[in-house]
Length: 537
Image (cartoon, rainbow, N blue to C red; front, side, top):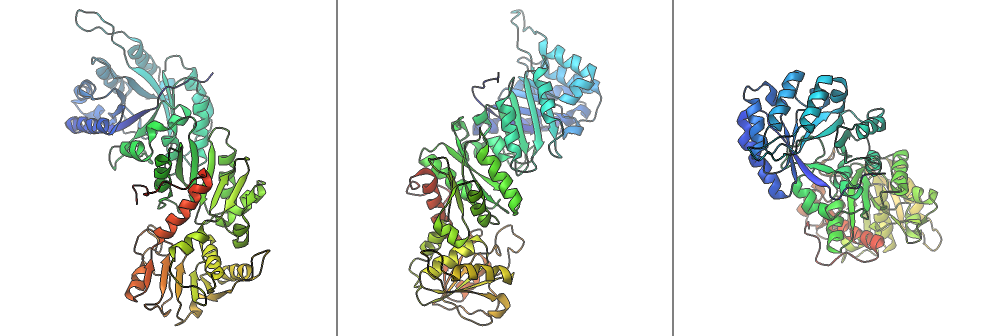
């Protein structure tokens, strides 16, 4: 039977590099407590070589503003300790002789099982009884956290290692942490928590591992780790403030629904911040996470299949962005779901959800978002240029051409632009043929356009071409042109700066982003997002 946890704690790990750093470390712990942390882990790996090390450790434990974990992490598992067993034991003894003693002592599974002197010493400390003065009242001694860390990825035999920890009668808590290779690694962490035989910490490090840290309460994790500033002890740790304020960590329940924004790259996405603020304001028990998925069909299919099919995750939908909007349609079709006719016509979807009947659905909210963002711009009889040939470009070209404009699609890869133009130009079902054609970027020359929409990642913050203007030199803009850049970070892209210099009306990508996000929220929840907007506007 799995161990039932009542509450998931927030722990902050604070490295103490030298005895002289104690005051600063304790101040950091006080700040962490003020932010909402429940435990502090004193990382005292480096104090073994400090002549004042034992005294420093005792001071840390005695003056700790919160219950504490004392950890002397071996360098083979990401720590700084390289000393002898005797030095390590002396540090633990110094910590345990303080009254009250630390709540926990963390020791690596490999050390515990291969070093008999370590195992015997740590068990003596954990099971000893102390007395205070003449009252002879027993004082609780530290409990053992058996831990395993792998910074290189998922180690072979992970499940067996965890089972070994659970079976050990001397340990109170089992901890396993590894670097996630993909977002799918989080599911294994959740499965370990679901099957736990004693209190367990199961976390994934790195950019793919945030979900395991935030959703620990959903699966009964004993604790999760946070940082108090830009420095953390493991890659991917959120701050305590982010956990509590942005992720509403204390309100996560076993029933919390999960959504994702899927793309590559995805770190820049504001979708989680926007949707999580809306979820909270609307009292919807759900969280959205950024999911970096390589822009190939196999990766998208594997990720979405595991997320939607997980019996415990409660994954209800995905916002689909760079690299995967065409994959979204294929995935839903192969899963036996329903693809909205307009998304099918465009050949791209930006939203996947699960309907009340349990079937998946795919829709495209980009089309209306483009029209909303260009509100007031006359389109019938106008000439429009759409840069790009991905999902957003397909939606923009379809929406603008449907409103009566003549659309040119230009892309670095001409055959992709031709494929999009050919698909949109021919009639399909109830949808008439549209005036859409493809052109080489170099062939645009000095043409003038009434409307320009950039649907490439050129100019995107953090991208490889963040300082570049995607509009070919020579293309003319003037004070009657309207320019929309779907890139929303930064707010003023190189394209918009150029358009402003030409006197054109500039429309930032954030307006389009919000318009499509509102429709996604309604598709998932059945209601529009709360009015007034989230605080991250």
